[in-house]
Length: 305
Image 1 (spheres, rainbow, N blue to C red):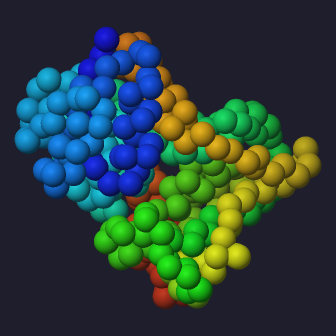
Image 2 (image 1 turned 30 degrees about the vertical axis):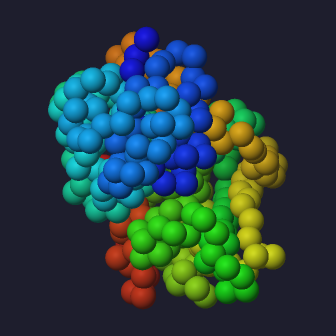
Image 3 (image 1 turned 90 degrees about the vertical axis):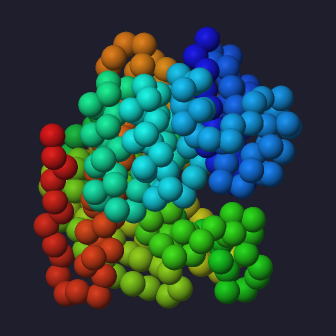
């Protein structure tokens, strides 16, 4: 069976990645590398797998690599993994820098390895099927999304996932923005215009125009009051009003992302949720970030190739 190595030892690696890799019946969880050797050793001991002291050694012994690392640590390691012939199960965002994100997509294409970006709503049930159903409809008019987390609430203590320097620095735009875009784009089309406005705490509100002609908004943040936190997305069009259903079972969704990666690797057919799509998300978010504080929308740059 394909051997899958894990890079990263943080809360997501412990609660989602490692359990899902262990439970997956179509692959073998081969081992762990982390920037903190003691944490990597503990995670490897817990799951009875090998601990790697060097990521390149893991790449040499694995067929695929699952990433649970900060985005701008992930990106250069993903390029190295692709060069070693490993398929890539990436976390979102692929990178917070456009050049690095494109480098990952280019490396995957150049070395002919499969890639998937784990965007929860695109793999969880029932949201993944719901997105496909809405993408098959025409006549969309507008959409409104919000993803407001309470990782850094003004009225309570931060949770375990808040112990993340990159999230503190980049905020909800970069952490949960990929989730909102991962639903809006397949339904309404690629983004051709984007503007961004700051709100309280780290809140950013995006206004988007899509290739279909539809307009959408997305309100994103990690510093909401506990009682104000929540996730939702509503689509409005000629067929009516449709709301994103609730979802659960994130480790199960991660297993389905690995299924998609292995299918793409076996067939040679790129998945729509691959590193190129991840690079496109980075382009849009980077343009939104650059426009914060500026008047008027900008033209969203087009992905190359």
